[in-house]
Image (cartoon, one colour):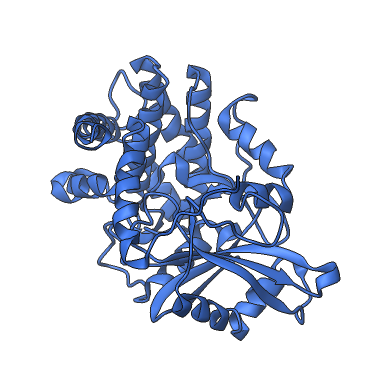
Length: 399
């Protein structure tokens, strides 16, 4: 029997997405933290944010949990661990990224049933890895644990090809997107708009410019679908578009993510102006924080709304932090905070880096080699998120 196709009418999309989001967040406390970014922002805006050190106003991720970091390929195929989701990027306080990452890593450690002392050591190593990146932003990060999650996903990403991406994303290498649980049928208006979008000159140049394709390569939309993906995309337009490049006999394929950009919920600095267009904001932030990703992105409009377009590369992978040992958790914390530190440091001059590093070194307790503000923030957030997670499970997972 063939795979059953789920018919989702456009008017029903939001309700279906909301139900799936709630169930997905109920899977674990770590999944809840990843999917409930708003609770973190509410905590910041509830007065706690004013107690944090105020770093230089730079582009920050805004939603810097561990799942938003991972291997990213550039247009030439080089791969690095960088920030891979910039929906919430704003010009803001870099301390926010540190706390968000600390909360995510601490929750992953608790999900792995690691002792509390591991969380304390993780936060110490986070601060050390971040400060090292500030002082030497061009120096390569030290290798993390050989069998740790970061190293494993990086090695895996470098071995991937189009076949791996196709089998993972569209379940086959044939030039068709299978409708079903993840991909839903388009309206005629949506399909027409997609054809028109990929006929634009700036879009053609972006697609042909990647992987050093010929600039006169003919681009053809082979298939497209509405994409049900992730928790953070709830209520936004999101589409997967399968393209054929060149002549049929030697055609290459690529998969493009077309995602609506909406106003960021992350608190932004009032001292520095950002692009008013939300798609331009995302792309500008990406170019500053994650150059490998930023050079592959384009801000455009789709059905009168701002959207961000990017080709998905086989090497782009999400970092999963599950079932960690204490050694792996500590090594990952140091390495990933170094990744964030490099993303921040490349936007500062040497004097700003030194001043921010010195600020991070203040207010350390006698028993913890990490700032007191960071320890208190992460502990408060863990407590509030675990309480909210249990209530979420009671309301939705048992329904």
